[in-house]
Length: 527
Ligand code: FEO
Ligand code: CA
Ligand code: CA
Ligand code: CA
Image (cartoon, rainbow, N blue to C red):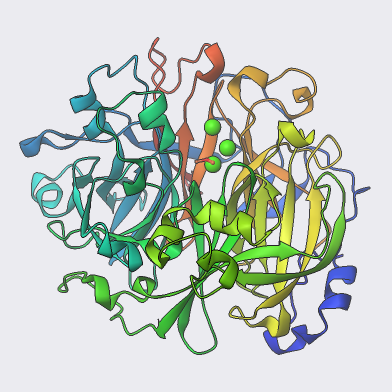
């Protein structure tokens, strides 16, 4: 049994029919706790469900807290780690040094009632870490290092703009609602602006111009004074994340989900091949240099309307969202206006609505793309599914693909509401769930216990099964799944402990629960 067609070299993927048939997930696989799996972090035995207000890990594993909400990351400027940390990107600096780029997704207005303070609690944190004498990653306390690298990009940071929308907005103010993201091959950070509507409708920010948000923003973490760039060619929506891959001719291909009911999956293909140097330290990030500045945006259309609660497969195509399309030309004045209303443009072309596409991740072994469709009450889809795309001829720039609704969430597969997903170097799929706090441990979600982190092996006796690696504190979800360069440390965001009115005292045993970034590792032999 293999999951996701692994073990096949790319040239062997021409016959997608047989690939999809062969590797369909068997829903009768029994998932039980205590199954042993050798992960990149080390061997572990899968956990049973837990409702404890703890970060539960398998025997022999520990975690350290790197940063919690509100921690000071640069004393001289009173810079603080933001709220509700989400995406984590690892940027190696060589040796025992690295940076983490961390998104802050939303606010707790009761904790920070004033807009001026709220504006500083969102955006992105760049945080220097280093290994201690045991080889464990820790927050770097050295003031010199902090001055050199630690940085906050907030709702106040002026951003440059690339792409057609730059005609209307030469610059934009701030980044916010930063959900997931990616590290580029040239070590910049892409951060995805997701639920920007909250800042208008819930937090009631004054003079909020929604058109400046819902973009993907590139940041050079190695140059603290460089301007972030909003790449408008990648469209405007509730960007959950972006999964990057290089095409055969070295162009950048970006897969993106829009986490809202009945929204779509998108793909961007850059016009130009990557010419960026590997290490960006001494360069300003100029808009025209980045391959994300220019290219074509597509939306996925499937050959039939699916119920995403059922296993299914078929064919699909990518529809180009261009003002040159006669339908779109009759609806929008310019490519800039089209990009600002990306969702509407996709709808005009009758793209296929999905049950809330959250993260996507590309398998490093076969290039197939998996999307987490989290759940969708409007479609009576309680548990979500994993949806897989196999590009025709295994070319990421292909205009047609095969798809498969691969694993359905629920009691049999043992997980519900998949959200953050991440293929590790061995193409095992790490999957974090996001059942809303208020629904946790109640029917129909009680089988899962608290939100959890699972790994789905690609090969071996447990291929295709969701093995639980960690269970979150009360009300929290895990997100930001990120491995260190050597894959021996897993950085993870523990977001919103205490959500849904649940009592959480994590992580410090006090009445104030705090979102925190942790480093998880297998305990050293000699301990
Ligand atoms: Fe940022 Fe859709 O979660
Ligand atoms: Ca999410
Ligand atoms: Ca959540
Ligand atoms: Ca979610």
